[in-house]
Length: 375
Ligand code: GLU
Image (cartoon, rainbow, N blue to C red; front, side):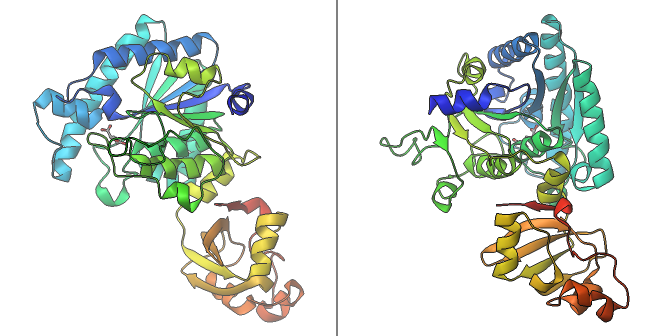
């Protein structure tokens, strides 16, 4: 298996590293300066090897709690937002200070969900990030907690970091946590629990292994597996490893896999398709028959009207919709026809579209170029 990870990681150039609150703060809530210094040193060293690093950091709320002497997590949204506003500055100040000591330049990027769901803003974020990376700068990303309220939040930086990895076409996503990976059972409760070194497929059994979120961060294995789904479907390998252990990042880069490696699909998908599959907001669903599902999943085909059984939602040409097959949603795509038109042409042959609508823009309801798998 070591061979597999060294093979997968041998050409890695652009890496997204996510670090969780529990790695960055003590149980008092104050920043864990030892960990922070070590992490920055290891990342700066990757820069010295000419790798491109994008850091997704949690810890704003944690650092704010430490500064204000709060014992528990703030309960109301307003308090959380205010605490994050206090902590984000502290966090960035420390990163700026320590990275500078190693000669590295950092930039702060705070993202909200709309920056990812809105195609125009997604592209803006991508261009800014790519410009920073091109200039040798390390972007440091967090959710913009001070303006994000519950309904529109990513909520956890595991998910955010996997979307960022797709956004900038990363070669690898590393999630540094307070646990060294995915176990066969909860290692705090079960002494026979074993670390799973490699996950080849996110089966139902694997998804069921996720326990509850950890104490300080918002993550836990549930969000890590969600991130793995996004990363692996985008063709990006992901590793979960213990961020508090000296040398973790170096070991990963040497292909030694100190944690759990999630193996991606065979092929990389472009950031545009990552956006369609995982970042965009959907406006409706198309239910398709098993023939269409198979053609899309196994043969890389477009979605034609003949395979559509039912359409629901409110969408127009150019909207993103979910495609539902036998076991639920398996793909998303940008439609060439609105809901009213699809209701008229569903089940028919493409050559009959013109008779039914009195015009025809395309044979496909969703062209393959605008379609991305989620399984
Ligand atoms: N954005 C939150 C913070 O910086 C953390 C979210 C998470 O723990 O994943 O405090």
